[in-house]
Length: 265
Image (cartoon, rainbow, N blue to C red; front, side):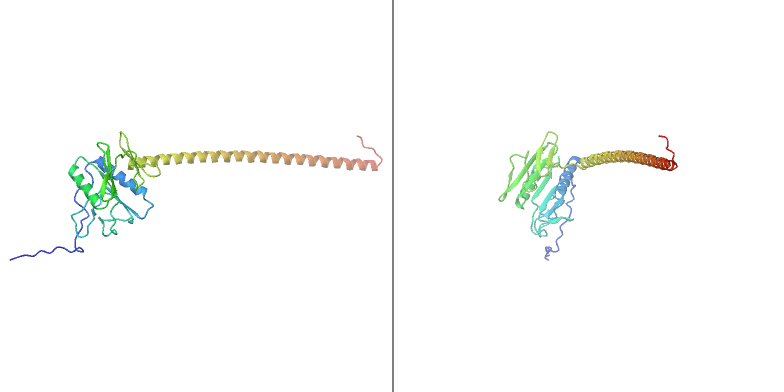
């Protein structure tokens, strides 16, 4: 007795959202993945047509749920932002991620990374960057025709697609956006935010102090002006009293003269 098996149709095929593997094998790798992904998110925050993801399964072929890879970070230009369980390329108008990042951990094997390179080369990645945070080494590949070719010098390299500049130092890799701002960890961002808050508070206090001093100076000026006005009023009052006294004296003198008496001078 023979048994026949049916292959699921493309519409029935399930494309799992997880490969069961951890996002990272250690805290250093995890920090670098989140820093790169977060930096890319911030860089393209105002571009609705740029999709950024981290550790997201990418399925390049419809009807094939075994050909897949989950880059540590990917950038797809021409695709809208939004939440996805996986990146199914045929659903994304056939657009592959143009830029991918991988962060090495001690558990990564040379064969595994070779397979990833061939995968990215086969399915249309334009730029591929591989960073080893333990050895502080960086490698990059750029598409030339059907091949991903090695970028000879990564220190100072500027990604044609991202505009991101890569700099290698003794302590670590440093990434800078087109505006020169560095990619920062969450802790560094929090510290920068706190520094900005303190600077803003200091400026607010200085402004309040200047406002208070200006108000106090204005009060003193107003008080002095009031005193001058009062002094002027007193002087006018005294001058008016003198004029009235002079008029009374002159009238009295006229009255005396009318009586034939010459007033004493």
